Figure (cartoon, protein in one colour):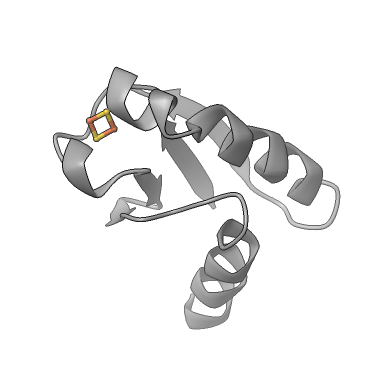
Length: 75
Ligand code: FES
């Protein structure tokens, strides 16, 4: 699984770096590659995260673990 977190300015200001910190913690329990990404063009709906090519909006440090689990289960 590959996860890309938007590092564009809008998502960054909304705290995308905190999502990255949370994902780094989750890498201890889940197997995925983590990258930063340029803006996905959905700034108003950020924080945006792409998982295996699927774009998710409204991601937060609080809901990202649930999202990762959900995507893993549906894989
Ligand atoms: S800054 Fe994240 S989608 Fe544009």
